[in-house]
Image (cartoon, rainbow over all chains, first blue to last red; front, top):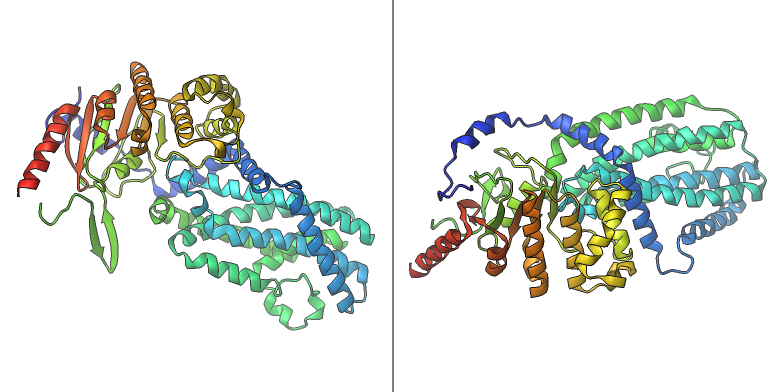
Length: 286
Length: 227
């Protein structure tokens, strides 16, 4: 029977219980959140697919729009830049531009949307006690569908310009995997900061907008001379290169892999620390 | 009581403002209990529900919950407006950790309770408020119905819905489930709940059989009006 005495005295049964309820360590809770969320892949795949379909529902071409708009963009870029720049090897430059822009637009979309990753799912977060990382995986998956749809354009463009990648092209697969892993921590980290401080989303978008010209899409490293020594320190450049290099060069340049690997490890560690401190507070910041 | 209104307190600490929504609430709810959370607007009812649901972790003190919690704080609960009712059931079920097979086996039951008929295969955006509410309620009470937490909106349904909801709750209690509902609708709560928790300004004033709690509240209001 419920306690019928008013003004809630602490009954004996309950006071005996309270010391036994141990708080989980916040670090363990953060790690659990990330691993539990990953294990719930059937849920975030279904959710992301539903969201993706919703974006293009009631339009005749549906998600073909993703492919078409990217194709249009690439076509215009090739038209303007390959005729404007005097490069020794036109075919190489075209392949460089298309594949570089392809991976760039995934990275920039992923980073730009990162600060809003929790804000965008707040109705769910405020209703169900599920791992917050679930919504991160969901967003990464949805953006991955875009990547898959635009990859058709890259294949078509390579066929059109007659560029045939060598066997090293298989290295693009681990490169994509590493990029996806990084997308997860970037989203968690920026998601935390972006929920607390709403300026972050605008700031990140502005930075990514300007960065279009600071990453090797339109220019080749040897074209910009000394400036490249500074731009080399941009992590995004390395993630672009681990993907593009094996596709268009007959070698693997390990400097990019090493740099990307270090960034991945540092990023994961920093994110785990930030998540440990902030995870349970995020819901109060909405 | 003069400095404390019926809402939580804003606390200044190191140039930041914090809201103390609930403090000093100690209670236990036992299997089979149906609890109404009552109190004025801003007294901490929704916050308490979210703490019970594991969405807000308490900054002090502890909470222990044994059993699967199904919470329903928002009618729309992040449903997909373009997806059909059937697909939304699938999504909610997946979120509750059910397998597709388990979910499909429950669909008929949900359709029957929510009286949706052929609308179940229409996009959710075509639903009336009442339809969406019935669907949400049916889904929440069908999957993992051990502990159910419901917020205010439950009182917004028509008489038919409230009658059905009360009946459903009674069935669940037979399975020794726990129901916690926050509402201002006295008739609804009296139909569904056997006890009530009264919150005032984030402080737990009473946890007692529901009629006693309402008596205390009325007394309190009368005293406040007189002074």
